Amino acid sequence: MTSLFVRRMTASASASGPPVLLIHGLASRGRVDWPDADWAKPLAAAGRDVYVVDLPAHGAAPRPDAPVGTAEVIDLLAEVVEQAGGEADVIGYSLGARLAWDLAAHRTRRCAVRRAVLGGLSTIEPLIHVDLDAARAAIAGGPEPTDPLTATIVRMSRLPGLDPAAVLNVVEGMAAEPFDSRAHPPAVPVLLLGGVDDPLARGLAQLADVLPDARVQTVPGDHLTALHTPEFRAAAFAFFGV
Image (cartoon, rainbow, N blue to C red):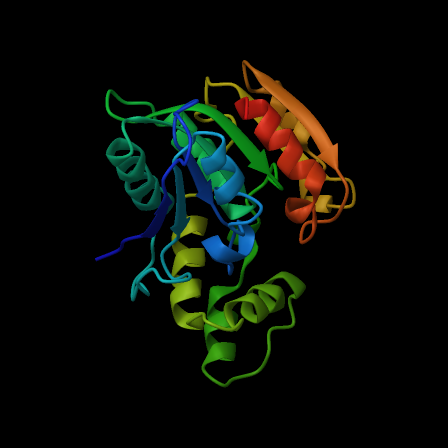
């Protein structure tokens, strides 16, 4: 059964707002994208409970042996919000931003996102262009992919602590339910953040155009480094009123 791993840090001051849910990117994990010293501790000190997830195939979460689709993961994230009290602010980066977008649009009686910070989000779905046959052949000992994107995904799947086959199951499932910004745009306030040197985030203004309440801000860095800048954290905290 597909599931997440969820780590909670309880607010160390009087509650100042809803819990904050942090969603990492592909081939990463909660503790890497959201170091406690930068995220959970200051948020908890400001009166926010913090929920840091590891997505399926990542970190301490189970390794799926079949494709894991977007809708399935959104349902799991919605359960976290429900268990956290029914409302949360959410921050996602890269794949996590794509999931946070859909989660913010997934408003139900028991799960509501108040505000969303989406970092490093692309206007397109890059995973649909991954050659999964070539990727699986490579991790099984075959030739390395010649397609640059597929080769990058294979390299990412081999990072320490990951099971390449499980990561490719996530890639396959997400590609089968690709991101479509116009299908169900969230109606909540959204802050779109992107590194000035991140080519994947060059379409943030286009994403803002389909949202009823959106702000766009650039921070230093590229796709790998923008998330870890003080400017990214300051923008996110200010947007949440922390």
